[in-house]
Structure formats: structure tokens, C-alpha cells
Length: 634
Image 1 (cartoon, rainbow, N blue to C red):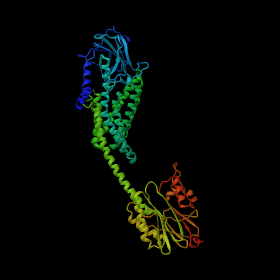
Image 2 (cartoon, rainbow, N blue to C red):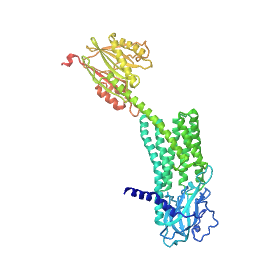
Image 3 (cartoon, one colour):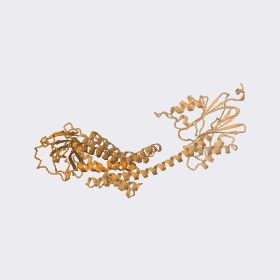
Image 4 (tube, rainbow, N blue to C red):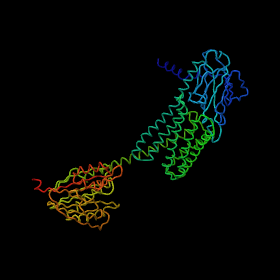
């Protein structure tokens, strides 16, 4: 039972529509005559139209700009033997916006509104109106008059070469149910032809959206432009064939939306060419942007102007010549890229195909391909989009690899930084130590390290120039070198001098390290030497220290020491420059005054205050409170 059912469905779905169309067609195309202008008398049954020119196989020239946009078509059509009757007409290629039909001198139907209150509508592939009973007689010949009007922007689309586009008209009277079925089937075919193209374009759009997110994340301008191409250009290609699907919509709104999408696409094209090809010429780039801006403004003005005049004519000329100039400039840029000045010749060659398609179109040879239902211009867009997709996938892969390498480096740097800044505060006999570390978005080079010596403890706190894995590695190197040298150096100044010479020997790329060295004795004696780091605070007051050059700049640097003794309960506050350099959204620094005023607070409170102000760098705070054994057990 399944096979007969399939056969029946095949006949109904494929063969039947062909039979219906064959039945509705006449053995010969009726003679159609036409005339430009507008005169209500041309609808009369008795009007003599013998002086009107006859359309060749239903084809007549579109009205030029010198007309008012009106033209009439008259034909004599055979009425079938049985009713009820309807009349259908198809006006292809130019798609007039407003129509009305008269049969035997009687108005049968109107689509849209004529001037002076024009309201042009988008119409289906076939327009069908029922003929009231008594208007025509079965088997007779009916006189049909078709009145049409185009908006000024459609009167002559090829102003560069000033040749009007043809209009193809087909008229027939037939059975009303049959013509309604044919009209419905014709509109369904429009949908069917649309969806294969739309599916391909949606595929590119989805790919573009995915990579757009990646481009935003990677801050890669080339990726962003590739993604925008895959989003905007397929939308541009889809919108034009989509217009016939919006039956009954105001054509001015549809075409305005088309011009806006077209403007976005032209902007993307310019930025894409100059960025992807690495072109440096700014004059022609600016001129290209002026072209699409002028085209969009003049196109919208001409489209929404419902009356002819010098302004509309100037707008139409500007629209066409801006488009022509745009293609000339972008073609020249792609030819320059193809000649070796660009970075991607295949993409330049594919984009030249688009320009070739445009120039063939304005020359009257668009090279339409019957099987896929597209012309050379649209095919060139698809070819170019494929090349863009290949470039996009390559850029995406490189960006992903780069991001993956960055994530690996970041993870390694974070792991190293945990060694630079211990999770738990160090233990120093006779002292209460509190520490706080607030990392920034990037891995920095803040560090502190404690080295035990006989009778004293050496504390190093510093900051490596730069960010990332390299800074963390330099910090580890500094700590390792200091630990090795501390056994030979009994003073803070000597340790910094030896450490400086070692860092000069190891550092080959000009980096440096700020470092503060404190030798802390159990009796509260403190010896400080400074290599370009921030001075510590004692009980809320900055300790005046002579500062030498940071480590790693020149091997002959020497450092001076400052010694003093703390009383029980005294507090020392060491910190990195991430505290004083914290910056608010308005650009105000946290500064030394704020730092001094909160230097007696806990390490965590100081770090939190600086971070809340506007953290720009890693924040490290270390507070030491002198607490000898008799104080601790009191």
C-alpha cells in the first residue's frame, strides 16, 4: 500500500501543478500594448489603443526618469467556457509597487495606494482578483487594462549607463479556484527557492557569531572583521531574496532596512580589506567610507520620496555613482593586494570577483545561472565568503593556540608566584607577623622571603619589573640567589650589593628588581638597606631611608644601611607599590598620604582599602610587631 500512496503523492506534488499551469496558459501569448503616463480614460472598454506600441513577448521598457512613473498595459484575453472567473497577472523583474486592474471598463482590484498618498506594497509572485459575476461572459473576449506605478527610485535603476530595465508582463483570465491554487503554489516556490540559500547563509552567520565571541575575547581585530563579514554579508545576501516573502509589507520599509544592512556590509568590506591586507593608504580608505555613507543617505532619500524632481534625480545619481566609485576604489585596493602589497592574495582575488560581477551587471551582462538561480555577482559573494571562512578558521585556530599557550603560561606563573608569596605568614622569633597578598588580573613579580641567620633573621621584600611567567621566574631567581648569598653576607647592604652583581650577570634583557632588605635581631635591632623599593612605616610614620638603584641595572652599585632599635609593641609595615599606585576610575591615585594614614592598620585592611580604591597591580603588605618573650607571656 505504501508504493501506490507514494506515486499518488508524487503526482499531486509534482505533476499536478504542471498540469494546472498548462491548463491556465493560452496556446499563444495575447497581444499586449502599453503606454506611459496616466489617464483614467485608458481604462474604458471603448478606448482605442491601436496607436499604442506592442510589447515584444510581453516585455516592455521600464519607465525612465523623465516619466511620472505611471504606465498602462492593455490586452484582450479569452474568457474560459465555465466560471467563476478570476484574473491573474505577473509583472516580473522591476516589481512595480502599486497596481490596479480593469476588466471591460470596470475596476476589479487594487494593490497599494497611488499618489498623491502613495503607499507602495511588496506583492506576491502572482496577483489574483476575482471577477464579479456579469462583468465577463463565458467564451467571450475581455478587454483588460492594467494600471501600474513605480516609486521614483525604481524608474531607472541603471543610471550609470542610463539604460532602463525591462518589464515582463503576463496576463490571463481563468477559473478562480485554479488561479488561486496557482498563486499559492507560485508563492510556495518562492519559499522553496529561498530556503537553500538561507540555510547556507545561516551556517555562515552562526559561524560568524561564534568567532565574533572569540574575537572579542582575544582582542583580535582581524578575527572580529572576519566574524562580522560572516554575520553581515550573509544577512545582506539573504535580505534581498527575502523581500518577496513579505507580501503586503510597505516596500519602502523593506528597502530602507536593506540599505542599512548594505551600509554595514560596505563598512565591514572596507575595514576588512585594509586590515586583513595590511594596507596603509588612508586617503582611499577614507574615500571608500564616504562612498557608502553617501550611497546610504541618497538611497534612503530617493526611496522615500514619492514625487519626481531635481532632488530625487540628484539623489539617484549620487547613489549610483557612489556605488560605482566604491567598487572602483575597493577593486584597486584588492588589485594592489593581489600584486604583492597585501598579506592574503587568495582573499583579494575572491573579492575582485565581486567587483567583476558588479561591473558586468551595470554593463547589462549579469551572467545569470539558471540552475542555482543566482547571478555571477551573488556567486562571487559566496566564493569570497568561503575564502573568508577558511581565513577565519585559520585565524581562530591560531588565536586558540595562542590563548591556550597563554593559559598554560598564566597557570605556571601563578604556581611560581605561590612560592614568591607564601600562603602563610613567615615565623620570626620575637615578632608577630601578619601578611596580605591581593593579586591583580595579571601575574606580577611581588615577593617576600625570610632567611634565618645565627642571631638574626633576614627579610627581603621586592617587586620584579614586568608581568607574567618571566617576572615570576625572575622573582624565584632573586630569592634563590639571596638564599645562597646570605650565608656569606652579614649586613643588609653587603647582601644587596652581592645580589645586585649576581642579577646583572643573570639578567640579559634589561629587567630590574626593587628590593628592601631588613636584618632583624631578636633584641629589636633593625638594619635596613634599600634598592629602589618603598620605605617601610614605623608606627604610622615613614622611615627615611637612602635608596640605591634597583637590582640588575649596573654591577657597581653600592647600598647604605640604616639601623635603629624598636621598642616592644612597635609595628613595622612593609608594602609593594601596588598600594600607593592603586588608581580610581577618575584617575586619582591612592597615594602616599592615604598609605601613611592607614599604615598602622592590619595587613588585610591595608590591602583591602587599596584594592577597593582601584587595583592596578599586585598588592603585598607585611606587618611586623615587636613582641619579645616577656611581652608575649605577660
